[in-house]
Length: 442
Image (cartoon, rainbow, N blue to C red):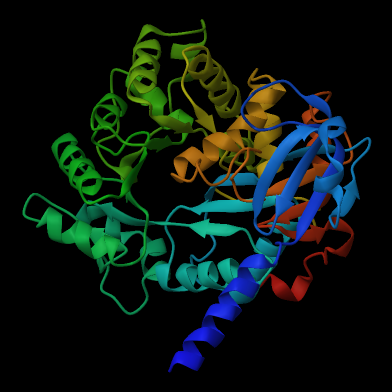
């Protein structure tokens, strides 16, 4: 036994004495994700999976350089890995398609996504494969969904909870005044979800009770901007961590509002024709006071208008309204994340996050703030801002290298040459585009 103990001790000493793999990304133009100005000729030292140092390249010592792998990024731009704050990858579960879309995201610099309610069985499996490095994919975080019983006639429920009666799957539960809310939240936690998504057809009182219990049990709370009939102001008053879909918030400024998800009607665009409205200003100030993050999803409205034009219809201005409201929210100090709620066509070189990034720029956000929305604010939404989202000592080595300067044009975000996720490199030159057979419904 003593000999075995000595052997184990010697192995531990040997392991402790082994220096971790060190890579130094040198001479980079650094945008750290915090909103701070670009810094030129910077070095980022990565040891294993973590960032060990961020410094001026001229401050690198001979000791630091010795034995390190050096990557010269002269003329390149180094950013934190990107985060898409609103994705759906498993409604219905189609493994081949999901793997293809996830591969495109990772090789485009997206190192994390927030999946916003799908078949948790499939999402959890993909999450495990991604975390282990078995597949080329961003890290995945996901919620469990709750809604009023009347919502569960929606066909997406059957697609995402096959084998369960609608509203009974632990990750998609029907809630009413008679529900045991603590038990429902406990079931949601058991799915591995990090958040509760409060979706539709719930009263203000139920939204408040669900949010309070989810927080008590350690879950984040993610909601729609309006939960029908719960108004945007009532949703914000419940204290969620994030709200999704900027144009849902516009119902706050209307005299009449939909009473259920199924009975939604269009926004009255004329009400916003003269600029900022007091109702929206008050809502945004309350969001800022409470620290509620806005998942704007401008791309949703742009895509719908594009489809309307394709049908020969005249678009009603949903994208312009979304951008106007996002601009007002930003001016009022609301934190904004970059989420898409959809993906690009199969043949597109880059995923939908890059559309959202450009649309946020079109809403008047400065490029540094748009990059923050797609990095550090996204990490805050996932409660992972101590781990990722910015380039800082101690954080995971989640990085993206661009060929062109994104501060000159956000279109230059589409010049990825390297992704680093968890210290592992993925060269854009090695990316395999999505093949037609990988997309069953394309």
